[in-house]
Structure formats: C-alpha cells, structure tokens
Length: 300
Image (cartoon, rainbow, N blue to C red; front, side):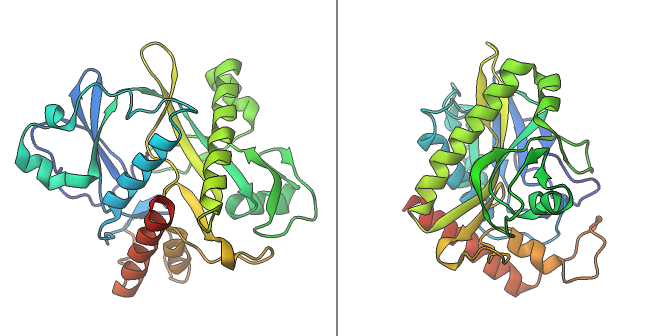
C-alpha cells in the first residue's frame, strides 16, 4: 500500500482517530496499540498515480470482496480480520462517523508488514510477458519458449517484488533476494502460502467464469512472529481478472479489472506522472460496472 507522491487527497474521513497512513486507495487509522481501522476509498490509482476521478462504489466493493476471500481462505492462513479483538462499534463508537464510512471500513489486527509483495502468476501477461520476451524467464524462473501472450503457465509461479519507496515503482526480484530480506524459513513460507492461496481462489473463480491471471498478496507478522495475511486479496485492484469465455491465448484478453483504465490511459499523451488525467464519464461508468460484475460473479 504505497502512497503516490504528490497526489491530491481529500480530507481524512475519520476525525476521532489519528490517521497514520494514506495509501493510494486505503487510509489507516490507529485504534490502539493492537488495532488499526482501515477505510477503503473510491480513489483509483494507475501507474502508481492516484487519479483525480473516483469510481463510485469502488471502496465498498473492494471491502466486500476482500472480506469474502479472507473468510474463504482462513483455513489456509490466518488474516488480519479474524485476529482483531475489537468490533467496529468499539473502535468507532460515534454512529455518525460509522455511517460516513459504512461498508468501506474494517477493524484489523495491527501487524509488522513484511518488506516483500508476494506475486503469483498463472498466465503470462504484463511485466511477466515482457520479461519472458527479453530473457526467456520471469524473475529468473525459466519458462517454455513457445508460450504465447496470455498463455497459461505449466504451473503457477511465485515472482515476488520488493516494496518501493514512496512515489517509486516496486521491483521484481529473484526468490533468493527475499531470502536475504526475510530469512529462508519465512521466505519459503510466504512463497508456499501464496501458491496455495492462488490455487484455491483460481479454481473457485473459474467455476464462476473468471480467470485469475495473476495476483498479489501482502503479509505481516503478529506479536508472536506468526505469519498473517493482510491488506486486500483477490480484488480487481490486486488481481488481473479475465472473462473465461472470452479468453484466447495469443491476444491480450479483455480486461475485467482496473487494467481497463490502464488501457485507456495508454491511449493518452500522458507521461504517467502526477497529476493524472481526469477520466471521462463513460470510462468511469464502465469501470464501476466491471467492479460490480466481479463482486456479483464471485460472491453470489
């Protein structure tokens, strides 16, 4: 959850708690020494820039979808929601403030975030495709030479990145570099859990007509040093969703996530620096519809 440098931000929505972090999409408030309150906004970021145009309903959808997946995957790994010991009413007793953030807020266990973003790829697309074209591998992992754009990989692969400093881009790194950062036991645990999470969600989503091409996770450690899943999981912001019935290897599949906005922005004369361009009403409406459709397909 790295914030974008110099991006315009509205005033904090919660006045009774100290704001400790502003991300591109989420704001984090301190409840006490053991808990945070996280509010998902309707802000949209692309190319690490927060755009001036919000997507109506986006924050509520991200929250609902993440909560759904956290509950569904809690047998694989504990998450920051289930480890929380306070209710929302206890953390935010003012009814007016609760109403202001309504279905966009969660109370979570406060964790020590790991300095690694866990990325799992099941299909060859995006930076993975570019890496494969250039080197025949992705993050140092050799792949068959005959793979097409958007092609399904023989097995999902773990391609971590280091978290960039504010305003910079994350950097894909070999697995061994995460060993240097985390130690071998913890690095292997993050890798293995990430692969298990991807398999579980990808199989479920495919039954509902959605391919999860790739996804990313964030993890933290609790006070006992146990690994805990945090942030968001399997949302249109953290994953690349494709409609299964429109998938064709060799072509860039129609996007079913915020890649749709990136594709639009690529048609503009914009240097991908702050400030970002405003989005037309049509792009906003179609993006909001994609988020709603993802929630409907995956949770109903």
